[in-house]
Amino acid sequence: MTARRLTLLLSILIAAPALSGCLVIGATSMVAETAVRTTGTVLETAGNVGEAVVRTAIPGDGDDDDDHDHDHDHE
Image 1 (cartoon, rainbow, N blue to C red):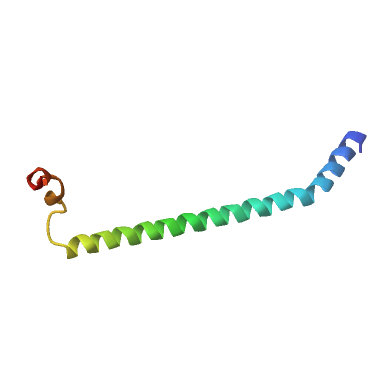
Image 2 (cartoon, one colour):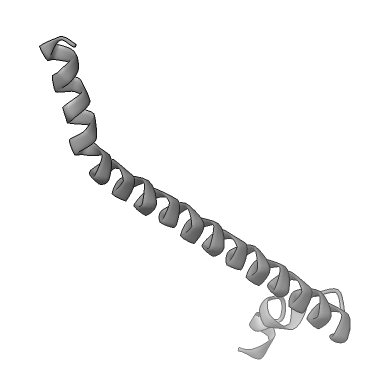
């Protein structure tokens, strides 16, 4: 075995524990990101369902004419 190959092998063996730590940190980060995205999707869906319930429960077309069309009449 040449000195260059031996140096490369020793470098890989020395770096292996550090690389495995990076892999663990990267995998943990990926799992956390997936959990946050899933939670965001669940909350968005719940908000959409809540909005639909409110729109169904409150009569009207959702346009609040009294707030902006008749302001000049109250002066």
